[in-house]
Length: 81
Image 1 (cartoon, rainbow, N blue to C red):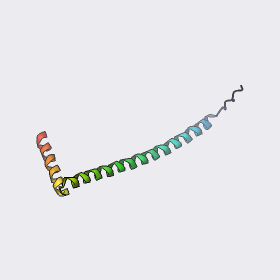
Image 2: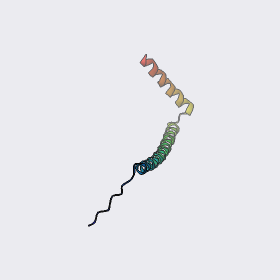
Image 3: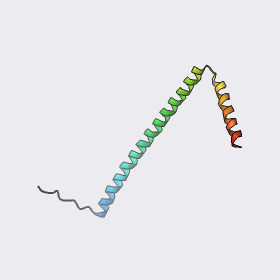
Image 4: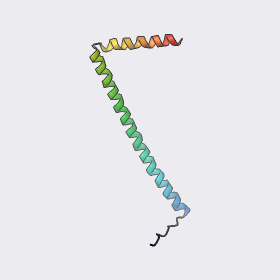
């Protein structure tokens, strides 16, 4: 079985190869960051829907729920002092 002869690259050629690989990896990172942002947005929308559905199911108005949450926040603030 014959071995494939290894190609000897000059330093300039090696640099070009590395720069090309960096560009490809950077493009992939950008793509993944866009996917991450999209998924986070989907999660936020899902959570909003769950919260709204819970408010509707409870029979309380949105403003009443906000009032209740605000009172809990005020209690937490007082407890920390």
